[in-house]
Image 1: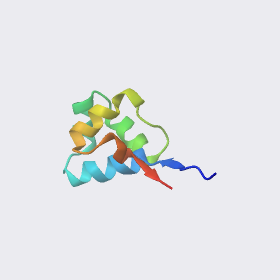
Image 2: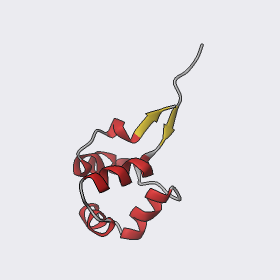
Image 3: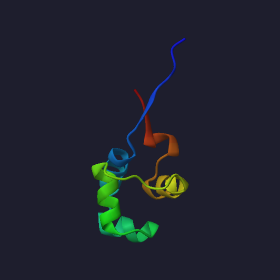
Image 4: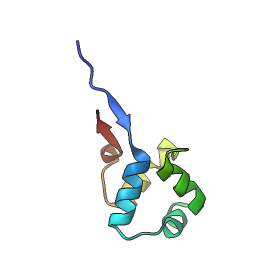
Length: 72
């Protein structure tokens, strides 16, 4: 039986939604209480935000938490 596989694309989604909403990395970091360097690392895929932050990120970026995951 085939299983649905999800690929995590959180960094790509954060960047796309952040830019769509015209929010700089610096401003976005301040809004969620992290450094702009942390936001940059998320967007580059070298690290990821703590899963507990996803509802806050979704609220600020005006998307659903499901939007951070993409069916592969």
